[in-house]
Image (cartoon, rainbow, N blue to C red; front, side, top):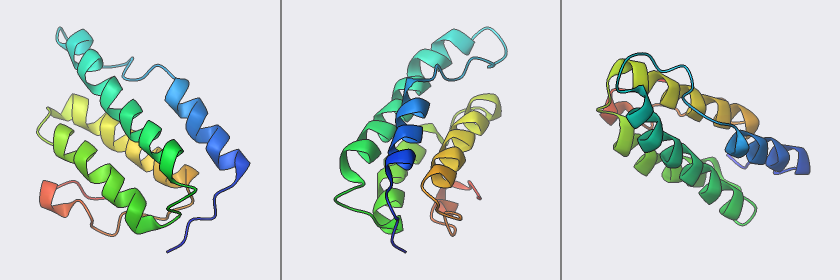
Length: 110
C-alpha cells in the first residue's frame, strides 16, 4: 500500500513528536518508564519524518515500527498500552488502516 504523504501529515507527525508522552502512567516506576519509553516513540517518529517521503509504503512504515515494538512489548500493560496507542495514532496520521498482524509475533494485535 502506498502512503500519500502530505504537508498536513508531516505536520501532524511533527506535532506528535513534540508532545510530551506517557504523562498518565500510574505508580512509582512511571518516571523511569517515561524516561525510557518517550525516546523510543520519538526515535520512531524521527525515522518516519526523515524517511517517509522517500519510502511512502506501508511495508516501510511497519518495518520502522518493528524495532520499536520489539523494544517495548515486554513492558507491563500500563506502559505497553500507551506505546500501542502511539503506534495506532501514527498509523491513523499516515492513513494506514492497520498493521495487518505485522506484530502478532509480539502478541500485540491491532
